[in-house]
Length: 187
Image (cartoon, rainbow, N blue to C red):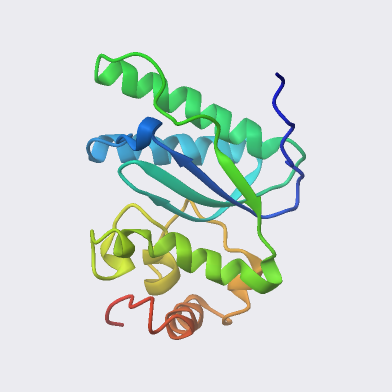
């Protein structure tokens, strides 16, 4: 039976998740995380996809994306998937699938839920008990949004930009917005 076509229109913002097959690990050391980020950066440029937030967990990823063109999100994810799976299979002398089926995506109502989606994504390592604050987890966008630590991979969404006139104001307002759940660390 044929798969249902995805909603993949340019200009919409999507929360994308992809899990390891049988929830198994898909990142095994720092080099793997770095390679995945490299793949994301290159695919984002190639397919004109803005990455607003992300977290790379040991067995899954969460991404917040806005593709410019129709079909770009699918091409972006396929490009990353092909390159990363080939890298993992070669590096660890394995074969077969790494991901559990196709990635999942949902359109985000940016006016109502964008910043909550940022929070949900960046709180993953805290909920998993890996760290006590999102800023302690290196493989996410939390250090940029909450602390202003440079991250060339990210393109700030206009809703995030409304939090302040400069990086300092935005990070301060972002931390305050989620002060009870999103303890980013000291200023």
